[in-house]
Amino acid sequence: MKSTEQTYLILGATGKTGSRITQRLKTAGYNVREGSRNAVPPFDWEDQSTWSAALDGAQSVYIAYQPDLAVPGAVETIQAFTRQAVASGVSKLVLLSGRGEEEAQQAELVVQNSGVDWTILRASWFFQNFSEGHFLEPIQQGELALPVGNVAEPFVDAEDIADVAVAALSQPGHARQLYELTGPRALTFAQAVAHIADASEREIAFAGVPPAAYRAALEQAQLPQPMIDLVLYLCTSVLDGRNSAAADGVQQALGRPARDFGDYVRRTVATGIWDKPE
Image (cartoon, rainbow, N blue to C red):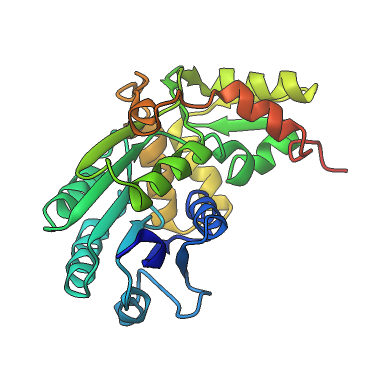
């Protein structure tokens, strides 16, 4: 079967990576099925009755679990989904994983032991967290506060993740590969925000805050407790320096260097997304 005749199921099709993967595959003429709650047929991680229709006829699946592989029950859900995907005839699984997360590595093992072809994309924090996620509004307002210390993170471009995912899904040479995807250099959050401030020609500050104070602020904002626990876990336990070294997964997968944070900042500034709201 030619790859262009296959059906590619992209889970998290409206997310940072899934939307980019979907767009690339559609532009290239591939048959793409979007996996999201609002798609037809719908896909919901919390409702296993939606899985069968989404998987029907799909040969390759991109797995992006929401909200994160670190949440309780995620590994068991990945196990159940992987089992059903293989039973339905899926022959390729591409898993978006996270660096430094023990639970994510357990999910990786589930996919690796599935009995079908697999590729693991073990990614660091995304550039796009600063422009498409929870960091955006504080940056627009002039200060990003997080419970992180002076720890460097080799942020990665979601565009690079999408490029690697598309290659893994549609091209040979990526079977049973685990790619550690990072940018080419590590930056502290303070340095990243300073890049954005300089390029935006704005006063934008970064403030490190104690975890207890940050938790209190999230509780005051009435975020669900599981989400608060996840954010604190990612900002404290995972951001402890264990992931500060850059990796060459983008180079391995695509034969080119990973995109730099500075390039991302320059192209994002041009959109005006970081301008101060009027």
